[in-house]
Image (cartoon, rainbow, N blue to C red; front, side, top):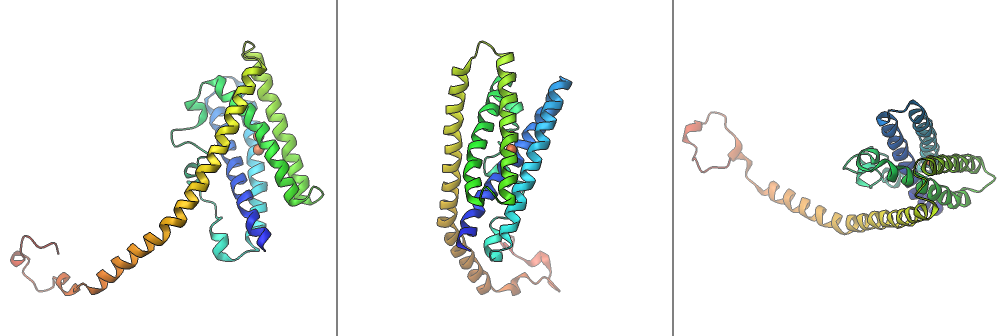
Length: 231
Ligand SMILES: [Fe+2]
Ligand SMILES: [Fe+2]
């Protein structure tokens, strides 16, 4: 039970990341004028949707084995893609980045995704049904990485592997930053929840002590009520 509880965030976060990738790819598909590129983005989006579906399924299997209270914390809601930073509130990457940076972003993140799946694979066991699914996903990610690399080197031959390496380092730092941001949010949530509850309790106590008869308007001449009255 304890292990399932500690595994839940892994599947929860990964499902978010995969779904966000699918939406980013779909946005890119919509924006390009090249039918060939559109097909590439579309197929990529389709893969990412399938990955998200797999991770949501793995999350759901585990969610059913913990208490309702715990499972509730790992319920998916679409706005969390933005609040967790998987999709920027400023828009999709294809709208906010130069095409060159976007392709480099895909190139580096696909590789990072593949390596983070190594850890999940160790978690579920390589020889299990889930392990086989994750191995399949890792093959997809490597294919995505390869496609982005080919595109990048074809279109920007002057920017050779050194630049891609710099992109990769930058994204590794960004990914770490996102994890720290998420950890901070959770910490603040723990810190502020008791405060919110205390304020709500106080407001409730005050409301209970108020004389609500003042609110009754039946058979009263409203013109006789003081203009300073807030009621
Ligand atoms: Fe993926
Ligand atoms: Fe991918």
